[in-house]
Image (cartoon, rainbow, N blue to C red; front, top):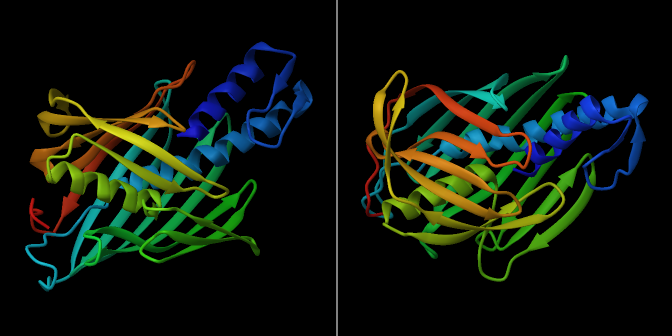
Length: 287
């Protein structure tokens, strides 16, 4: 969640210093008159991570065997976005599952210090019978408002290669043995590891201009009161790497992602589930 770190530093700079440093890659010192530009950039980066992060809740359909056919089912989730306790935006998303394939669409809106932006993403993912894991096929991402952009990403060789197109500019990436995934599929695979009883694992996210490797560690479950569901047992998964994040999954809600917390040095980022509806069956622990 690099963007929350960037946003935190920008907000602090605007409020405390006559000269600020924009924390995003490729930008240098700005005077107070240009600090608002740095903050606006932070808002875009905030959505570019938080929106797909919320999409992390798109998870595996019930699979007893590789060739089992399932009827189409839908999962709908709504989240709130907070920065240091202040409500800054919301996210609505729909997962449509059929057999071993899913399409996840998400829409988020955020406003920070009067700066508004909208973020949309559509992801296609599927189960790989050759490697027994969830693989991103492609995803499209569109930001409207300040610093609008269009991004399309496709994946080959079971996720070991990717091609990124951002507003017509092309680039490619590769990984030796761990598939590159978008955030939707990354969280789906994380959930799969939880169902398999794994206690630690490595994943790689395909970002817009780089790949980000993460190490993840499963911690002991904890009981937490989560309105409107009441007391739930949540399983924390701590991420280290480019950003430090803790994810919380609820086994009683089919391992739905309940919240995710970014551990910034100054400001803290948080997303929380507000509502959840599903027509899908409970997932199996044996894919």
